[in-house]
Length: 488
Length: 97
Image 1 (cartoon, each protein chain N blue to C red):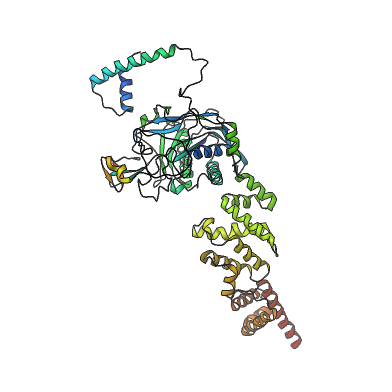
Image 2 (image 1 turned 60 degrees about the vertical axis):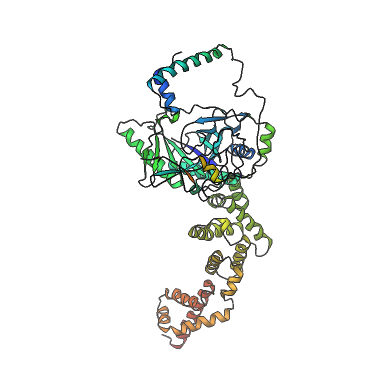
C-alpha cells in the first residue's frame, strides 16, 4: 500500500507572507530575494498572498475536494537552520481542501486515488553543504508551498508513477506549478507498507523522503516494497521509521537525528487571522478552472478520432495539446486538408523524437504549427516524399527556417516530371547490365536495388513508389524485347 | 499537577535549552504551578463552543500577489555570526549518514 505526500511550490509572483519575488532558487544569487518577514526577524507581520490561497482552492476543486468554510494557519515548531523563524507556518486541523480524488490510468483501467487533504504552508530555505560547512540561502524561504496528501490507495510502482505524472500534468494545466522536478518545485514523499494477501489490517509503514526525481520516486518505492516483503517473509517486523533515498547506491536508508521532530507543538498562528471561505468565492475560483487533462484527452479521442494512446501523449503537457489544436485549426482552413490523425502522428512521432533528442520542450520548438501543417501539405501534394518531409522537419527544427524555404534552398522538390524520371531510370539500367541480367534470370530482389540506385541518382527527390513502377516497367520491357529477339 | 523531571528534560530538549540539575527542579515546580493555574480553564463548560483560535473579529486579511523590493543582502547578513558566498554559515549538518 502506497500513499504519497506531494509538496508543490505555487509559482506566484511574490512569496506567501511577504512581497519578496518568487525566483528560481537553483539559479538565483543566494539571499538576494529576502526581507525581514521571510528572514524570520522579530516584530514582522506576515500577510497571506490571496492568489496562493486561491490557487490552492483551485487545485482542491480540480482534485474533486470539499473546500473548507473555515481554515487556519498554525505554527509548526522545530529547529533547523533552513527555517529562520524556528517555526513553519502551515495548516493543521483546518486544511483548505479535504476528501477528493484524482483519476489515473492503470493497465487494469481507470482508478481513483483518494486525496486526503490539500493545505498550504511556506517553503524553507536551502542548505548547501560544502567543504565541511553548511551554508543557508533563504531565497526559497517563504515561497508558497502546497501540500497534497493521498490515501494509501496505490498498490504498485506503476500506479505511483501514473499518479505522479497525472498530478504533475494537472498542476501544469492549472498554471500553478511548472512540474520541474530537477528545479525542486515539486517534491514527493512516499509512505509504504506491505501486508500478506487477504490481510485487511495495514502493515507498519515507512516514510521515504528526499525523492527529487520521478526516477528516484519509482526506484525508491520499488526498493522499499521489496525490502519490506523480504523482512515479512523472513518472519521479521518492519520498523516504523523515516527513510532517505541514497541515489548513488539506490537503496533506502534510515534517516537518523530527527527523533524529537514529531513533537511539533502546533498552535494557531496568532499573527494571521482565520480564513473564512465564502461559497461565492469558491464559485468565482471554480469559474477559473480550465479544461482538465482527462476531459481534454476524452475530447481528443472523440472529436479528433485519436487513439487513447495518442490523446494521452498529446494532453500530458497542455502546451503540446495547445500546439496540436492550433495545427488542427490551420489544417482545416486550406486544401489539401490535413487530418487531425495525421497531425497527431507527426507530432507524437517525428516531432517528439526530435524534442527528446534535443531535450527540448514544446515552447522551445522553432517549428510553428503553421510550418508543420505547411510541411505535411507538401507531402500530401506529392511535392516531397515522406522521407524528405522528415528531413525537412529536422532541418526546420534545428534552424527555425520555414519548411518551404528549406525545400527550395536544398532543391528537395520531388521530381514529378515522369519523363525526366524515366530518363534517369533508363540510364541506371543501361549502366548496370549484369544486374539486369540477374533480374531477367528471376532474381526479383534486384528490382529494389535498382530503385535504390535511382533514388540515389535523384538525391532522394523522387517518389519511391513511382520509381518502383518505372523500374519494373523498364525491366519488363527489356524482357519482352529479348524474348522477341531470341525465341526459345 | 506535578511535571516529572523527564517531561522537563523533554521540553528543554525541544527548546534547545541546556539546564542544570537545580534549574530542572526549579522549572518542574514553576511549570507545574503554571499548568495548575491554567487548569482553572478546564472547569469552564465549553461544550457548546467551537474551538477558538482568536477572540479578535478580524478575518481574511490578505495581500495581492505583487512583488516588492527585498532587503539588501548586506543588511540581511550583517548580524550573521558567520557568512560565506553570500550565505549564512552554520555548523555542518549531515542530512544523511
